[in-house]
Amino acid sequence: MEFNSLTGVKKEFRDKLMSLGSRYHIHHPFHRMMHEGKLNRHQVQGWVANRYYYQIKIPIKDAQLLANCPDESVRRIWLQRIIDHDGTGTENGGIEAWLRLGEACDLDRATLQSMRMVLPGVKFAVDSYVNFVRDAPWQEGVCSSLTELFAPEIHQQRLTDWPEKYPWIDPEGLSYFRNRLGQARRDVEHGVNIVLEHFVTPAAQSRALEILQFKLEILWSMLDSMYLAYVLDMPPFFNTNGDSWAEK
Ligand code: AHQ
Image (cartoon, rainbow, N blue to C red):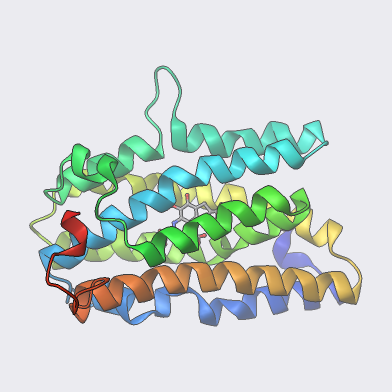
């Protein structure tokens, strides 16, 4: 079903889903600073290291959804999402590309893989996403991925901005964003069709909007934690006995 040629109730529902784009994390102050070239090296590195935790949990989340889904035609398509992140024996996936993004930002792989820079608030937000999909009906899990309706713009923004505004970052490292442009569009088309077909009553459609709002809050609160730590210099326990939280 062509997303843009809907009519009637489905079009109304689609428009309501799209209207939540105003709450997408592209509008978060941290992302606005990134877009305007205002982040320093430490702030970019903090973002990359914390988003690494999100990236490695996406295939776990997708596997949870597969485990809940009895429809092999859906599983066959959804499986690609795991491959996109984990790669195959011959092709690197998004997790490897994210490690290379880290290296392009002068963060070695071991530092990202140690997770020692992952802020508690980021961990709690990401874990709540994985746990939601583990426990929810698979169709609700699909709905929670629809924040990617708004993702192509944010990936394109980084591809456009970073070479000019962060010249110290090796542009080779941006391949994650480049790959994600097409993958996000493909994933969202599949996800939206499932959501439009499954969430048909007014009550179901308000549930779908609630789920999308929940995921928008996850993405927003991840950046809240990063803004506190890296922009306001208030990492967890910054005002206690002085031992730096990240080094523990
Ligand atoms: O890199 C991202 C990614 O692989 C995914 C999978 C999808 C999901 O299943 O929830 N959402 C998502 C997102 C990725 N990148 C975010 C970004 O800002 O770079 C955007 C995020 C999303 O919009 O949900």
